Amino acid sequence: MSKFTERIFKIKPGEWGLVLVLGAILFINYAAMGVTKVVSVSGFLSEVKDYYILLVWAGDMALLILATGAQSLIIDKYPRVKLLGGIILLLGIIYAILPFSFMVKSFPLEISYTLLYLLTDQQWLVFPLVFWALINDLYSPAQGRRLLPIIGSFAFLGTIAGLLVAQLDATFSFGAPRLLYANAFAFLVAFGILYFGFRKTQIRLVKKKSDSVREIFSGGWDFIKAMPAFRYLSLIMFAAGITITILLYNTLSDASLHFGDNFQSFFALYSLAIAVFSVLLQFFSGKIIEKFGIKDSFSFLPFSLLFGSILNFIIPGIWGSAPAQGISKITLDTVDQSNRKAYQALVPDEKRGRVSIFIDNYLPSLGTIFASLLVFSIISWGISAEISREIYSSIYLALGIIGAIISVIAFFLMRKVYEKSLLSWQMKRRSRSSSVMDKLDF
Image 1 (cartoon, rainbow, N blue to C red):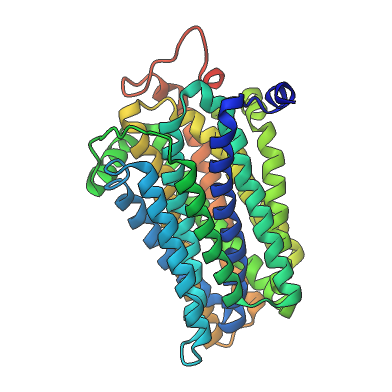
Image 2: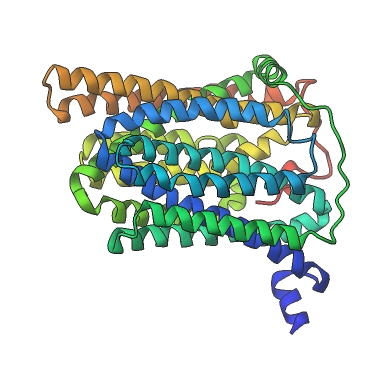
């Protein structure tokens, strides 16, 4: 039996224990996020006018930018197991306290759901960051290539479990306090798994010089300014943040109007469908990039945004907005993400982290902030001027199309300077014996 499992899962007998410990912790985290993502959004929209979620997104992205910078100050200063344990305990405590905000009648429900949404997004950033840093300390590159996809699959399973629980809540109305207490208990279990699973595992802490927030900004931006292809890639990501934000808001707004009290059930199933399609497409991402090449694979996101935004503009309502947003989101999280990582592998090691944070985090977040505030202003103006929803929604959807067009233009400009940028002294020299694609696992 052990030989059979080793052949199927590529896990050696002595590795099972740690893989299951790490997988269980990852499963719990993503299951909790799956529940709170759906409950927080559906709860917020049921208590507040839907366009106020745009202000929540703007504030949330500002927090994400600050958190991304702040993490660099502590990630290499403390033992990873203790740091992960501290985060798990902190999340458990917060989930145990948050139910009181729902049970105290004088506390506004809209604030409770806002806090829950902000917690979920910060959890989405901080937990994986520390978790995968711990993984890198535990396994050699050869082990990582075998075991990381297996450990990572627990995140997908946890997401499915969390979304299914959210779907059950839509049917049986467990209520936010019960679900939050369940999350708190789950993180207590996760802490126990971490504590007992790592009692006999020694991990040496290698202290590194941590970059300051200012160094991350200046280092990443200085490199991007010097590289024409990265400048246009930055514009693509900023424009993508604008268009995806507009498509997501319009989907939630349309669904809230169309499904009414059944919104939570729809949103849980819709999120589940996106997760499943993303995993299926991810299996083919490597082959797609190999077929088209890194340069031309950057076209998938801009053209999916253009197609989605035009589709949503032509077909109003949920049957236009839901597919449009889904196509854009799936493309961003699969082919485009893999392609960006392949291109960033050409950046020298000492600069790669800063460039990656800037392109993958800061620029899309800034695009989200810009779009959220602009769309909120358009809707507020439309309501005060007593303009119909169809008209002011057409205005912000047109802005989404403009954002997509900007990303397409940026792609063609990037394509022109792609080879020139590869020859820059600031980029890694490509090996003659193997390509970057040969060294990457998707």
